Amino acid sequence: MKWLQELGLNEKQSQLYLFLLEHGSLTASQLAKELGEQRTNIYLLVDVLIGQGLVEKDTSTPVARFKVTNPEKLQELMTERQRRIASQSVQMKRALPELVGLYHLNTAYDGMAYFEGLKGYEAALEEMNKISGEVLVFAAHEIEFTRLDAWNILIKQLTKRAKLKIKTRILFEAELKGSVRLSVNHSPLLKRYMKAGFWGDLPFEGEVALYDNAVVLTSYDEKLVSLIIKNSAIAATFRAIFETAWSQAEKLD
Image 1 (spheres, rainbow, N blue to C red):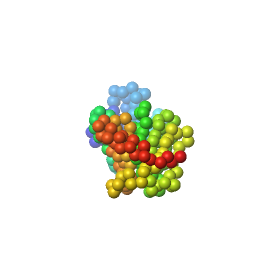
Image 2: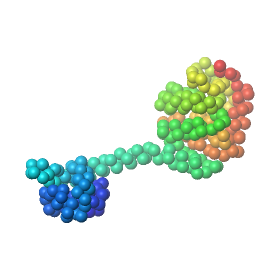
Image 3: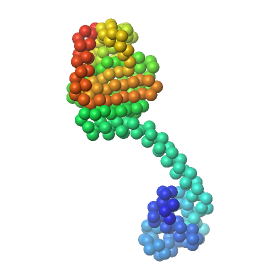
């Protein structure tokens, strides 16, 4: 009986199926008497088995009778169950980085959370919508052209942040001057260009965002990755760098 339960049947459904398989065509009253169940419960159990194609209803007699279909139907159910499990496994694999990231983020004051893929990226941005302060960003504006999927999520989250009246200050690299088209209606969004050569010869790739005591590092490569570091000292260091760059930056609008 256990193998039937592994196909998705409960104990009583399995018992009724095997009883019909062994005794052939029976009425609901006969099944109720033999299995010690109320007739109304028998109908409920039979309806499930009919829905799965394991039992059929014979109405050619004055009183309806029930009998099992070809047991090969069980193999079809097994194949379908394996297909669903495989599909669920793929979905879980995609969602797991986001779930693990949220777990680490919410179980430690000082810690790190890793997010992967578009869903993970959106989850990382969502964290910035839960604050009462402001968000500071060293921007990777090229994503508008190289990662349109991520860009659309960013605009969606900035719009949501605007509705929440969360102030955002964004710094773009000097060479992007004249090409930035980022705007969100009714948003407390301030934008400036960093002073040319601010980073010296250091390559500045990806994006850095700051909020509360957290730093969010995002790489927009093919494997989209966001890392949230919750640490007040690290956040304070990045915040000081941002404020220095902001004070020297040219207003964008």
